[in-house]
Length: 138
Ligand SMILES: [Zn+2]
Ligand SMILES: [Zn+2]
Image (tube, rainbow, N blue to C red; front, side):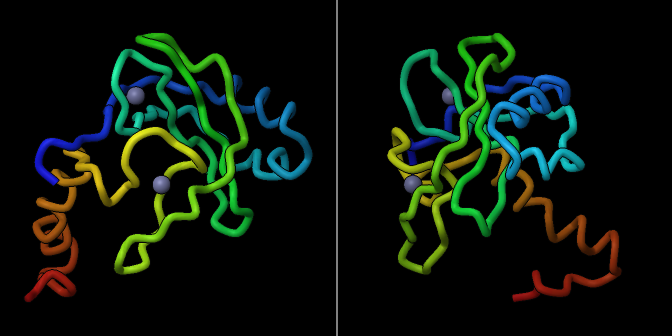
């Protein structure tokens, strides 16, 4: 996987903007308004150029789609869209975390330095919490 990375661009989604978006997207998503919170989002797509960037802001494994924020450059997201999930599965049946017809590689084809950092320190965090390495012992 050397050389293929997610975009990693960050932005901030405010709860008020997301709530407006859910209102426009209709009842199904508005029913999830208790999960709405302001959040920092990261573009997990492999793409070239300055944008647009995409990040999932509200997902639902059951529904087959998720609400995505779209933004350009250093701006805050100014549009939101409900996009169908990418149906691709990796060799070990891990579903792609992106949307249907997304640009770039599927999630398992691109490296995410932020995830790798968390994975690298996960055993230490687990040990600090539980006093043993649990699932991380090999
Ligand atoms: Zn991006
Ligand atoms: Zn995909």
